[in-house]
Length: 581
Image (tube, rainbow, N blue to C red):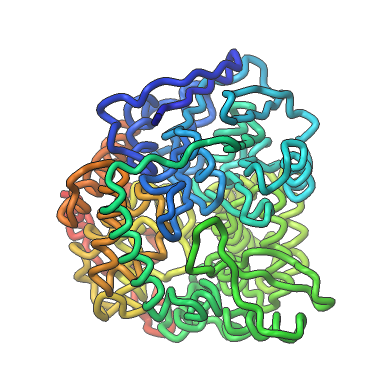
């Protein structure tokens, strides 16, 4: 019973439609990008009525496939002006899939700005309710009460925007509930929370009570694939129980990247941070043990996850401070802002969760603001005050809430580490050339998840590559194709560590998808599907006005040497242009 749900915010109507035949085998990122490409005018204003926000669970979301509860969110990005897909791990997408909904398309816009609504989706249909009473609140105050109204976290999951989305800020993300019902899981990048805010949609509650199981066309093939993938994840050193991710979370990368000279520090002025050991995953593990009195291993962010990399940082009295301090968030507020106090980093992370903000963009914005003299690197208390100003929507807060590039322009800062208007994540491209090429050509702006070449360049997954070698054209292309496929499956990107090293695991992923859909896909179809996704996204961006000149890293990286390797960005433009040529 796969169907598409259209939600019109102009007249607040909703209707179900059959999945068009052209989209019969598409889901997740493949489907969100298809719908955005085919239905959204590429030159439209991202906060205007012609933009759409599309939600789609992956091929295997809602099934017993391990680590597969991802939801893709797509639209035209208010931050970059190009196409955007961001995804999150949450039970929300799993419930949507069990209701037989392949995609939700939010379109239109209220004729008068300012009013907010919420949507309730269940087996009986769709209903709208006024949501003005939910606005202006921290998400931790608003979301649990909303869930309780409809039966509690065991019955429903919630998608919502925070005050940043209400104010249509470019750094606003889309928040989802985690397994414990906390409002902590984000499709964070690209400002899609602002796009929802422009449509007056505050929240979507999904209740799958009474829903049937997700239909599987070939159960034997699906089960065969599921077992192969589960075995690979349970065996690999990075993804296995009490392995690197389960013990230290993604922040295990802090010390690794610092040692490699690729940890961007104080707005990308250095590749090493003297306070790295104080904020690393190992320090989080040790600090929690001291404060709680026992080893605290990490937890899954969503149903069915068997990796369990999401941490919780505790206060000195043993109570919870925030979840989750991801590597990117740890770096953004830590090394990039010159802050080595985990309690201050945790508070900044918590505030972004509360206000609906992308931690990568806000950490990058604070660093640019420090360059502009707004505050001093390392002053964690002042950084916290500035993030609170974003929530208050003061004039300064509105500038900061619209991201690093806007902030750089406002304060005359030339050193803004962005591509296509999106701030770079936690990997220094002058020290890791493959990820730099990913930043340059990604359809999403600077985005490590578009093609995580860190796996071979730093972690030695699928063979060790020299990170300083600039010959990475094929690597950048192939990783982006593979990632676009994984983003369409509904699996977490972190399965890549295991499936790149264990071929049977990769086979398993393809068999799972083919089993659900009833296709004859093999591993040879992965690149084909990934290319189909990227071709749609590249075409949208070309129609939106992007050219090869937008596939470039910031000018300062071409001549400013990065300690400790003293390297510059030396990948020729023609090599970048060859990635998708």
